[in-house]
Length: 172
Image 1 (tube, one colour):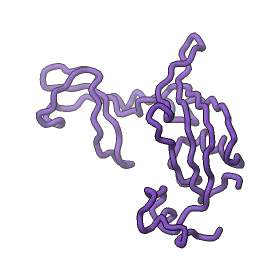
Image 2 (spheres, rainbow, N blue to C red):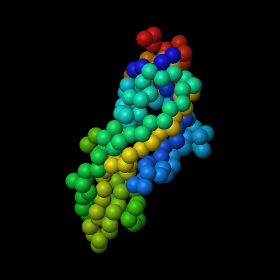
Image 3 (cartoon, helix red, strand yellow):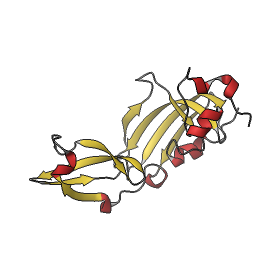
Image 4 (spheres, helix red, strand yellow):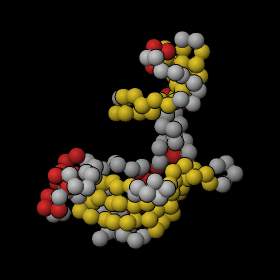
């Protein structure tokens, strides 16, 4: 079965960023956690460039994909570096490099502390991987039809949940 919209894809991946000298640094490897990624194709569950590269592939396929920032987590936007009051963080200990998840205009976002100067905190609301060229090595393990519940939720549901039963699979 080829990967098309509204299918659940299970895969293992190694994510690396490409450094200025052309070498790669591993950022994440699903095999080290023994936890493959499962996503619903065509529902913006993964970065756009990777989703495009996976379209039409089948279980068993192995591919290598390099993504420029615009097709991954976006180009860095310096306007997203802001100064806020320390009170926005409650009593949390703040040090440069600390990250927090907050609610942004488009949903949850990660905020990284760049500098703490008294009661003022400089934060970066760009995605931590924004502006980076990324490299994925992917092995597709399974491609299956999504259930009605998964289509309604916009993402795969955990195995064994009432709404992930085979009987609920939508015929596409």
